[in-house]
Amino acid sequence: MEVSQIKPRGDETMQTLEAETAQSTPVEQLLETERRRLHVETGILVLLSAYTFYIASPVLIPLTISVLITMLLAPVMNIFDSAV
Image 1: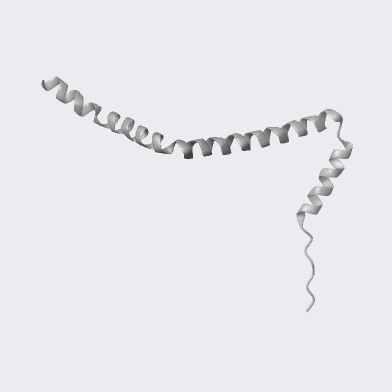
Image 2: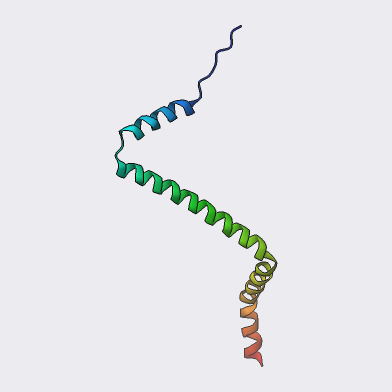
């Protein structure tokens, strides 16, 4: 029984990208570079935001719960205020 090797799709994609890059203009190459940089910056921003929320969670979680409880109990407090 002979096992045939499967050619990964990445090779075909890489060859296609290399062919397109060789034929692209400097403006297109610059745009591609800017897109890549934008993706990297977005990823860094997401990671920094997640880390900031993780560090601030001891403060943010009780603060959020208190705001939600205040909004939930506001109608009850209005009833008590009108009765007094």
